[in-house]
Length: 332
Image (cartoon, rainbow, N blue to C red; front, side):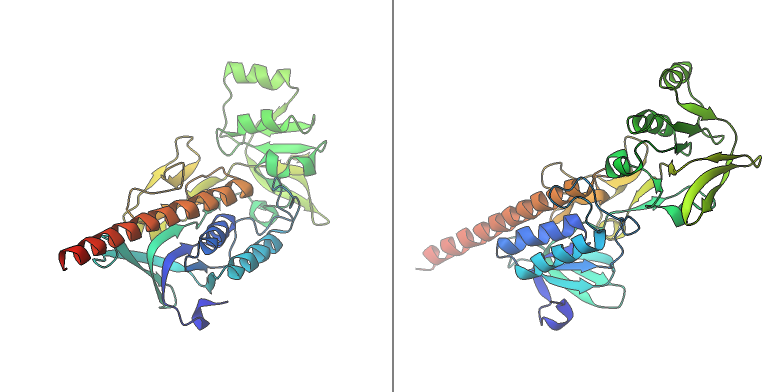
């Protein structure tokens, strides 16, 4: 059900982001008899893709269908779903809650949700190279992950766009799925002597010169157009976007965004087991903290975060119960 009609404005947990991580956390918390609301803008990162891959028992499922199923499961365990965009949040101590904080999350349309804990699963933004045609083909025949899409382009002509240093690794990796690999240096990538040797040993074609656009024929990628006008035929293009965490709400709570150690973008640091951040009461899970995690990994992280948050609430409630028990003894 939608939280607008639930009559409930205060929850145990507010989950910001209704993807695989957020919905998995909501299911876990609902099964733990916690009141939970999921705030979701309905803009999943993988919406352009035809199917989700590597998700056991659901391989190839349409991303929207997977989320619809997840929403139904979460609602079945009592979770509320609120359509909207969370823009910022704040916390204040709650002396009645065993010393824990209470949070208020503001939505873009003026609504406010209160909760004892916050879990941010807002994902990331793919910042694509400024090359004509890339955004329109993104998630279709412009790809980034061989484990997500390699099978679908196996044995085809695959172009690796040199937009980031990781392109050399991508070229060697996609060679597993096809013997027809072309690396476009794009005036960005400069292989070392060792890397030239690796590319040659794996029979990977290397093309110099800046990439200007992608060529599309009959709604299918057909080639890479160089600034010189030369067109190199390909069936798919691999690029490495810069990955930037959707971290506005976390930053408003004092959780910083930092550059990822791999140099692929920005993320939020969180505990590997459970996703606790540096700010008490605030958790993060999914791609907002794990930039390279696939859908199943994000779902698993959501489960772990839900369990960790429930345990944290349990300890707060236990502390409060002990305090009340002591006061009862003293008042006799």
